[in-house]
Length: 337
Image (cartoon, rainbow, N blue to C red; front, side, top):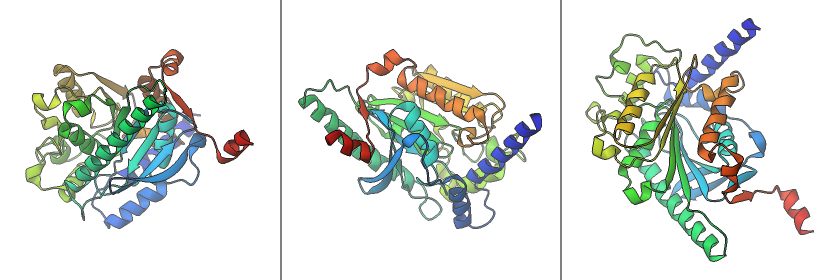
């Protein structure tokens, strides 16, 4: 049993290393390996995938069988700023959609090095503006129809390098937009890629996935060193004013990650500025362990916990939401017969 556990852990680490760009080899080869390892034809739990343009940005829209009609998640994928895609994140985001009872929108953002900072940030801002407008219109229409429509709930979620882009989005939003964001969920966030960060300057990091070379190479192709200490690249450099009225944050990561100290520092900064922040640390887990669910049982438990936090953690809390039951095609035909 112990041997099987060790093998599963080794396989998980081998897979998760494909999320980290170390500069060795061609960028296209890195992207291909990442997509091949994480893409899947069949989505879990009956989740359906469609495409929709928000603004001019093509996005995956993942819809679980049951979801709160007023709740939607905007997911910004990681991949060291140079890789990742909606296809690679379909399985993981489908699980999130099911656990959080919401639709999940995953944009096809521009990637470095061909499209360095701030290209991806601009893409996410455009998607958010369009998504926000559509959700407000939908809530208004429901109200006109006499539905007991609740205020729209937008969740911003991201992992790894995507967390930098997610925080940049929040920093750019006025308070009235921030008020409509239910949660910001950050998985294993990259919060400081400045030139003086120990993540870049150390000879070796105590991490099973990430190395100094990953941070050095990724940051070098993403932006100029002179930009690395701005809050839109390294959120830890945000001022207290920038952090005021930040939406409630959930940070989830493994206890064996080199990113843990930065996560603790960011959580403290948020709380000191009067914001809510849940720091959810999983002992003995590695970077983005949630995406190795075929090997790690903790992956399932971690997403269960995220779902409970988002939905209120009880059936009573869920009943207050207006749910939509998404029928399969054959069910829809039968219901009309």
